[in-house]
Length: 106
Figure: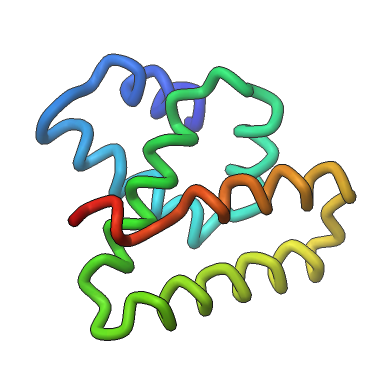
């Protein structure tokens, strides 16, 4: 499934890109470790940017963007710890979390 979505992400533009962003953000929230491991195993994945944009878009409409971003990061790190991610996976996660920013959509 992720490979198919990644293929679409690499070829999409316009409305399709927005749909892929939404799908990637949804998968991030529902299958966090699965998606993180996929992205780490596929460093050239177009899906990484779609995750970043999709999650950033979710936060861009929050009343308090800074709080939404802080909560997102804290939740992701807590989920990663509970899932027992390796130190390498945690470093990779930190890189992705550093890219997520609701101000991207300003």
